[in-house]
Image 1 (cartoon, rainbow, N blue to C red):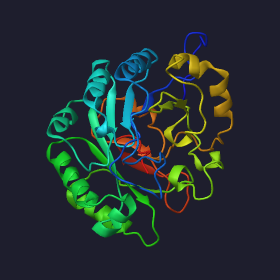
Image 2: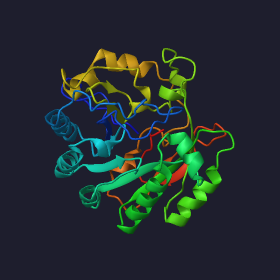
Image 3: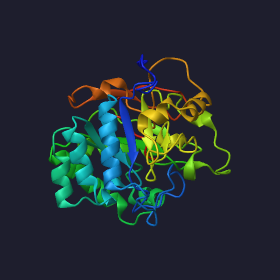
Length: 314
């Protein structure tokens, strides 16, 4: 699965195929019970400037990365998202934007329609009150639903996943509604993990066992402040900052090796949950459906799914 590079002094020990770029901690919603990033209306875009993200994209392309995912927070709230998408596409990278789809500007729709760009979103219920109880966003159900319809109308590749948050949540109704809206591919159900707002005990008691087990093997994540971690879910496993080191230096460094060593690796090969990393086939030209997988609510590690890429948003 992961290609080992022969020259460790000039290239990362493990060849990354994708990066999750958490460009902002700002979000219209207030998902108090499950947001891994603890994002919300008072979040910030961090200390990474547009030029810093550009430099990182250049480095990523040079290291063989073929896909980037812009995530947050809510990435459409970042003022430079269109330029960041432009830069990635100009380097030949595929782009996924993981959005709550609460609000999409007309100009942003034009950006999303570009070849090589796809969308992803999370959905919770076909009941407006329940959906908004989870997101904390008044009107979020109707707006997200309407923008899913608009994306499909425009022919923009879109994948949607369900996240089980509340007892008795109408996830079956939500899946049926997504089908009626025209969402294709298998719609998978993920669980809340004890990370971020999902950690009801203490933010100091992070458990690496909550991770999928493949963090960092073919993907890394970068925070709004430039901090590099094995994935967005393992945000406490910091390995350096892109503002003081190159990506290759970090991936070759002892801190990265130490962080990777504490993550329990699951048996069974290359299946990963939607809440983690795209598989290597996400680097192939998009044909509308790319194989990935997601843990079922019953706790099983993985089940095949047909999704466009990964879904770390909850």
